[in-house]
Length: 186
Image (cartoon, rainbow, N blue to C red; front, side):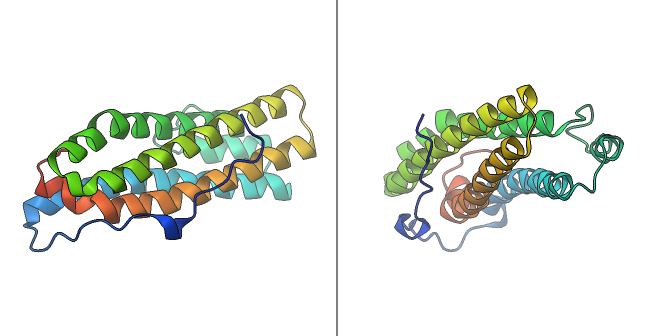
């Protein structure tokens, strides 16, 4: 895996066809997609805050345990690596569902969205590469805790978060309306 994974240029994303006059029912699958992404955005914010606190040295192990104890999805996870590992698994599962179900279905029903779907799948590959890199760095951090190992993992997480936030927004705008128009459930 290359050490320097290049993040995609947002300005090169294909524009989706415009779908006007959607009914409320047709908007619902797009809203559901936003809800799923919002859950992931919340997890990223929690992780970002915990990483910042750990980086600043203002969070003890006990405080980290207490902070993560209240996370609904991550209830039993107490350490930074486990939190990121769980988040990585959620993102991977979410993208696997999109790649194997949503995107092929949309491409089949609405050929005008094929370029958008292709781009989203390409971005999933980059997300996957970033996830693998982060997991490697977290394993290094666990095996040999050091400031440099922490910095490397934190930097990789930051890059992953940057891409995911941009990707989620694009995906919601680009395919959210189409999911309802073409009857593709989320």
